Image 1 (cartoon, rainbow, N blue to C red):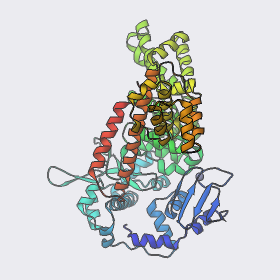
Image 2 (image 1 turned 90 degrees about the vertical axis):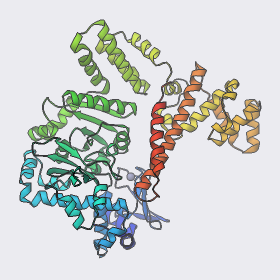
Image 3 (image 1 turned 90 degrees about the horizontal axis):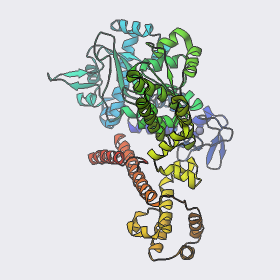
Image 4 (image 1 turned 60 degrees about the vertical axis):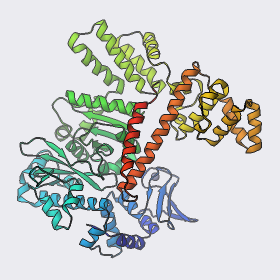
Length: 590
Ligand SMILES: [Zn+2]
């Protein structure tokens, strides 16, 4: 279904946001220009949820969600954008006509969403009704998937090579179908349909839009699973299967379970396991962490007990630990999938298993290295040393000093090594980590370090080093500082003024700056190795700036993808370059 912009505006105008929200939140009260209520998307007692009728938007300052009237209905009903538009259109008695002309008028991105939405309906209907999908229905039944779940996840079945014909009939071009990722040209000049003769798992983004498909063959064919390729609306690494469907409960419980397969995630949710999601046939990565952090505070990894499962768990664990996400790994009995376990033992037993088999990161790693290092050559002094060093490496990935200490204690006990020796080795191996320095000497807590103002306070730290070690002045250009006040102070310092004189000068120029400056000077961190600290902070500032620029580009690219900004291929190139650059710089490594 393609809806023209005019119609969407008409629907929006006919559904004032305050009246729609009030239907869901009867307590919504007018306070000045805004309307206020307790947020429906997170638990709170004091209202931080605002609706501004003039601008037609809502915003919660507690959990940060916000948007227009369509977004509000999407979130409260947990439906897709299309469904939300349809719902509000119906309410206002506005007819949505589907015309070829509308299709021509919509942007490329909207076209792709339309094609995917239409295809989903086509596959779904086929699965439910066609004689050709009998085997698929049986397969899903065998795996314990109910009709209700099939509807919730919009599962489907793709008959042999029919999607192109279907889309053309609907008025789309072959080119658009290709851009949606449903087909690709084959050597014979025809087209290969990715989903052909497969059970179709539509992949939703967090807004409930269908962005791609995963397909499982039920014929004896390789590969067993095949996904449609990445497109302008689909990035594998930025989405998780099943996330959209579990969002309402997830917003309350904030716990995610990462499973290996689509069916694992589906069946878990069917059994009422909140937050069960799966990765999309790609290794767990940093983007996943970002996505997860928005909706959860703790992550459980549940991977198969085979080697591949352990490797995947290890990789995911490292990334989670590196990014400071609380996590643990649970194990399934060997040769058993999560869905089998659930079907056999039920929800309670499954949750018990998650709990009883769970290992914190360091316990998981110890078990892993014992297996890796001792299985071949046994436990010798040499293999033990290797194993311990491997564990020390892992521990440095975590920047939480308290956890580091605890983990080292655990390693000492379980590997039977002297704790003091471990500590010394640990410190020797990883001499100076800036974050630890801050905590040791600057009594700044983790929150300050994680703060958005990170680069700002880094600049202040950097400035402090220079003020206390004036010979470093020549190493830095005054334009290096982004913080105007830091730049000013640096300039004053280059002309040889003392701290007191700088403070005096500041107070004359801009009252209040001197308060800041005196605080800065008094809070100076004492570094044991100034040269090293200087280099590390400098590098960190540069890394942060690169990252900021990269995120900015990311935003631009997203706008581009959404059709809200002119297309520019250079952005992609620049983005790629920056990504590899910031990788090269690394984090925290001197
Ligand atoms: Zn909220």
